[in-house]
Length: 138
Image (cartoon, rainbow, N blue to C red; front, side, top):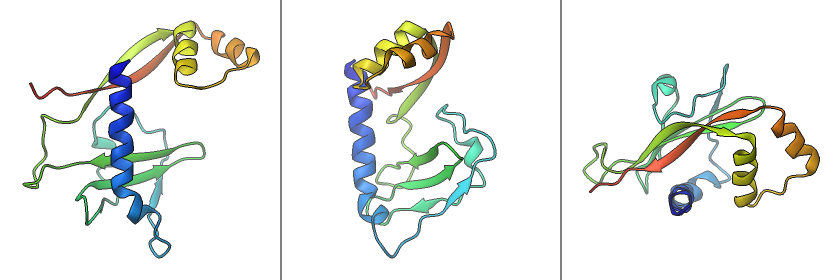
């Protein structure tokens, strides 16, 4: 689960680097309506028409989309020379897990599940998830 902690830490660092610009009272960050759920696959093809915002301090690029249930965030970090660094990042892997594995993962992540919620999850035998694995430069 060290990989899971690394992913969470990197995501928090990314959000923290954008925090000053995200909480500014004067700045409104546009979020486009997502007509269909965004595929969480590590590719940015669905974001070609998105309004990309560049953070002046970190030079991270990001865009927001939302639907009636979720907020989707695209974040692109570039190396200091301004080019995409393909040795750092995440590789998203599609996995199939059982209902019991999903329950164990959610509880391990700190989520409290009622017996009712567990029964609802167990109604489906398997779930498709995307796991983000950090790329190893070596």
